[in-house]
Image (tube, rainbow, N blue to C red; front, side, top):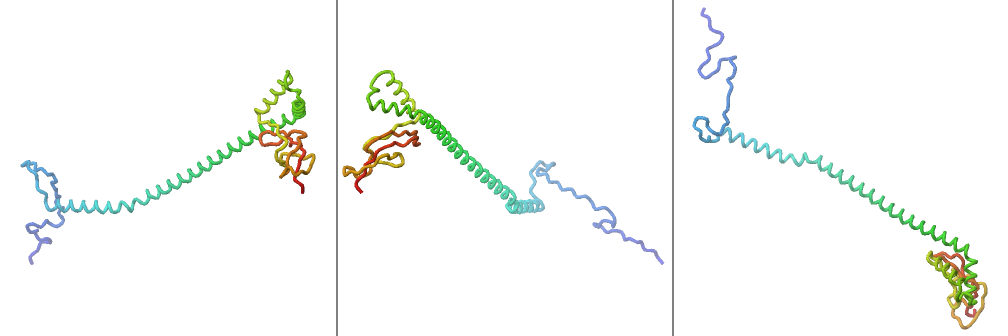
Length: 216
């Protein structure tokens, strides 16, 4: 009985079973190192280039989908900027209102202070007006003092008012006497007993007057 070998000899072109697979090296240089000429691309190079171009196209198409996160971040930033702008505008409006309120309160405080001074000087001012009506302030040092006092008060908004012939206004006049006459078509101041005093629009004392009205 003849013995047969366990493994047949490998035929030509077939690697022996168990032998390592040979390493394949691809020379991708475009210039032939031997001849120095430009090599023509092989079919394998063309296929590899097409595969790379297709991969790049797919990546470009997928890029807009991946851009969702930056869009969300931009929208959030715009919303935050709008909120901060609204806060700034609200604070600015509050500051403008605060300035107006402070200016109004300052003006009111100054007006009240002047009104208090005028109220304290009212007996002196009444005496000056009576003296003027009686012709005692035509000349002399007392006339100069009275004029300077009234000019100083006028710079702070003080005004004496009330004259015969003007329409009667109960908001600024106090009627002490009442009469009727066909000579008037509406209630009219016929006599000023005491002139009124105002500071700005504030009435310190209403003018005390006699009133003539049409017959009822």
